[in-house]
Length: 163
Image (cartoon, rainbow, N blue to C red; front, side, top):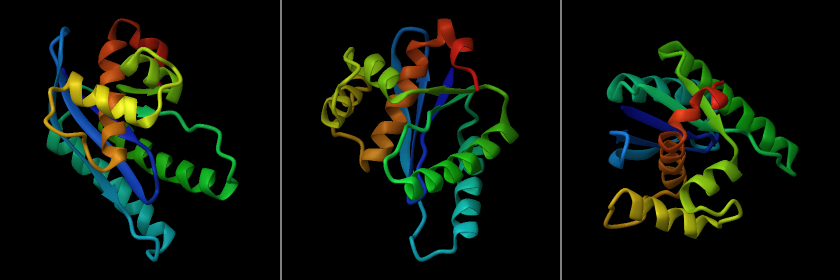
């Protein structure tokens, strides 16, 4: 099974692709979709939509998992991330109905065994679980991989996390 994990963001949308044989996740690729702050909002959202479309056609994932939008103190940031998340979901749904979402705490718990783990702990566990030489960069790409790993570990209960 091939799983695409997406960490939503407007400026940087991290992604990670793994294969999972039911025992151990294996790294396929990772990266980030970047939109510059001086680009008009509609163009940024179109770039993210097309970027996610490209990831779907390039990797042909069986399932796609995304981090749920968490509560944000800055309303402007929350709206922008929500819009970026919407663009990604539209592209994902165009590709498949196999869409899933996980809260930040569920991701931390699945990857590290501790629901309040910090970013460094998550990055180290992603590196270890995928037998990587270095921590995935940018941080958003490591988050995308963590989301894909979370989905792999949740397959037996996957319908509970369906969008």
